[in-house]
Length: 125
Image (tube, rainbow, N blue to C red; front, side):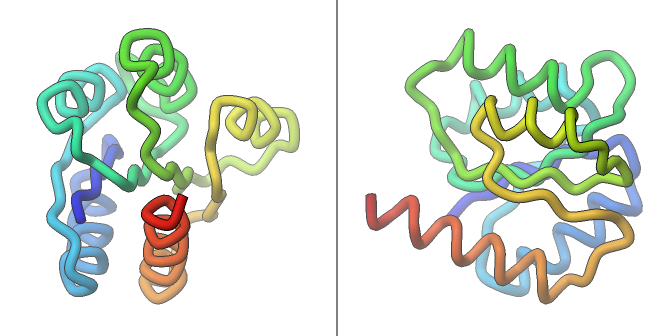
């Protein structure tokens, strides 16, 4: 399975990559929403996305809107990994198809368990 990790922090990307790679995921990294849009266009077999909210150039929410508009047939399982937790932001993300919300700092085991649960549900549907 392939996962896209989108965060402007190289340290966070490395932590997420280590956790997901250890669970058998192939990973692709992006440093912001614009980079992520290019990466998902080039890797349309991505099944899981870990996405930050606050990033330069294009936020996580803006990435979701662009992805839904430009690639309507792609529907990976998406989890927000962020310091943000405002209910209106969570609701907006859920309306764009986000399946989970994990607050930083995160526990690797929780991220891996969430990734496995969501990709198994995706495979079953």
